[in-house]
Each structure stands twice: as structure tokens, then as C-alpha cells.
Image (cartoon, rainbow, N blue to C red; front, side):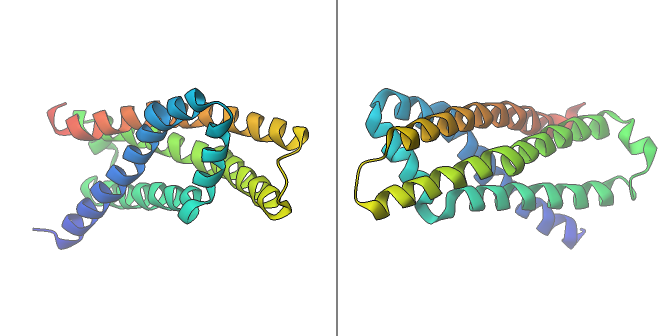
Length: 171
């Protein structure tokens, strides 16, 4: 048994469950609940973006997951041999990898900056002790809408990744 593969696989599964589960939960449960809450939903989203550095942790889980996956792919493919990628399993894992890297890119380059900007605005509002200005509310609303769309796109990418990874050995 290859100890490195065993450790990488466990790490890959743990970070993948955390990352994909978090994204699915946000996309299909948290955002619909926030939208149903009206103005209080905005307050919840502001707090969520600040809580325990959620955007940073989600990004880190995605990055660690992808890096572990790439290293495992390197090992099982014989250092990226073309023949492995032409196999059913290699093709499925490649498709899943591309989907996961797409989700990670959306999270790192679009969603994380939006969430951080929302947190910054909400921190300024909280420090002022006054309700948010109309401009702040408008900016938070735009950021939340863009973040929600980005999280949903990530969720679909991660769904493809999970399905491909889970079924790869049967291709």
C-alpha cells in the first residue's frame, strides 16, 4: 500500500466534503433563506461573511483539495502519462479536476473578494453605530447578488467534480 496515496486520499476526501458541502449548503439553503428574510437576510449575510473568516477557510479548503488531487493524479498517472488520461478513469478524473479547478477559480477570484468587501462594509457600518446608508445598502445588495450567483455556479461545478470522482473507477 502506498502511504502517501492513503494520506492524500483521506485529506482530499475531507477537504472535498468540507468545501463542496459548504458550497452546496450556501447555494441551496442559506441563500434562499436569506432572500426570504428580506432586510434581515442582509444582516445575516454580513455576519456570515465575518464569522470565523468563512471566505478564507472555504478558499483554503478548495485550494488544499485541488492540490492534493493534482498530487494524487500525478502518482496514479505515472507522472502524467498520456495513456492514463485516455483511460475511462483518467478521463473521468480529468473532467472532475477541471470542474473543481473552475469552482476554485470562481471562489478565489470572484466570490472571496466579494465576501471580503461585504464584510468590510458591514464592519464600517457596525463601527459607526448607525444604520447603513442607502449607498452602502445598494453596494451590499449588488455584492450579495453577485456572490449568490457565483456560489451557485461553483455548486454546479462541484457537483460535476463529485460525480466524476465518485464514479471514475467505473468508466
